[in-house]
Image (cartoon, rainbow, N blue to C red; front, side, top):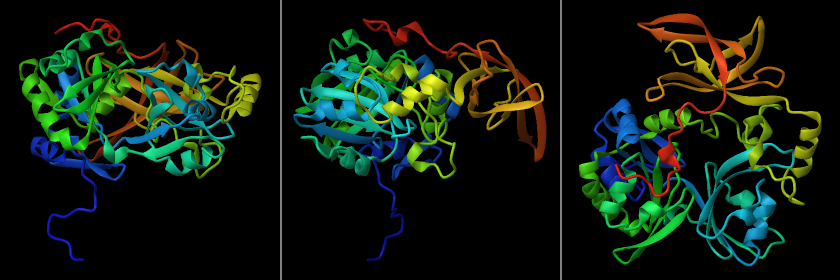
Amino acid sequence: MSRKQGDTMMLETPFHSRVALANELNLWEAWSGYTTPSAYFDVELEYFAVRSAAGVFDLSPMNKYRITGPDAGAFLNRLVTRDVGKIGVDRVGYTVWCDNAGQVMDDGTIFHLAENDYRLCAYARAMDWLSWSALGFDVSVVDESAEVAALAVQGPTSCSCLQSMGLDGLETLKPFGIAHFDFEGEDLMVSRTGFTGDLGYEVWIAPNKAETLWDKLFEAGKPYMIKPFGSQALELTRIETGFLQAGVDFVPAQETIRPGRSRSPFELGLGWLVDLNKPVFNGRQALIREQQIGSRYHFVILDVDGNKPAHNSFLFKGQQQVGTVTSAAWCPTAKSNVAFAQIETACGDIGDQLVAEIYYEKELHWTRVLAPCKVIDGAVFNPARRRMTPAVAY
């Protein structure tokens, strides 16, 4: 079959017609087979829309799996490291899942929609693995990625924008809570979740109502300075708030080629997600052994001198190389040069001084900088509004 000019092999999200109109820079990238915007008009202005007003990000390409049946909860509890039984109905839980060696395959969120009814949202495609893992359980696993359209509405005026669209009472929704609203005869699910570390929500709707949702949201949000934002601005916000990105800060265990390149939850600073009191889950025995003998690496956040991001830098303590930077950015709101790093366990206590070997290019000239950096205790951006209930009206 011949293809017409302008045809693409990439998938388009249910919001694509609106996203394409808003994308003034015409900058695109691939995400799970979908074409998505890297930036719309200016990365810094998009970032500041999230931090100062409200930003909207098209979440639709996220891999979404519906897990139902009498054994749905037991299946997930066998799959992930945290205790799924503690995630109540209309609540969301962040989690990771491991292979049998206790190495992280992916992280994501579990939405407890109703009794024996869950949605698992993941970075990597996981249908084959979920199906294999479901053997022996009375459970149904369905890939509903294309059947659910989603937007992240993030920033201090996000609640006000959604309330102006008619979502009365949204301000009382607690972090990681779920609420449902009628939207032109369709169920609009709203979760108080996001990847920006700010006050924010994610809205989930049937694809046939996606364009109408976008239009009404942006019309209601005009007085609150609502703007779309792309993946580059999202990258700044997630680094500023200390969120890891699969495929960037760690290699999913099933994708590693060389031994020793995967990481455990303990090595990623995610030990708080591991419940060893559960009798059985993937990787439990390996994680118990790791706790006994110690981890190879651990995750740290660094405050780096200067304003040159330490992208992919080697880290030194004295003359010894002790680790590498996985993510780095100059974070505008926090006014900090932040880096995430994987370093050897013997190094990297809070307050430790290291040196980052930074290379940057300007006018075709490469410069090497040895920048002092310090291990800090947690993210550089963590506003109170992120947790406040009722959400403050801005």
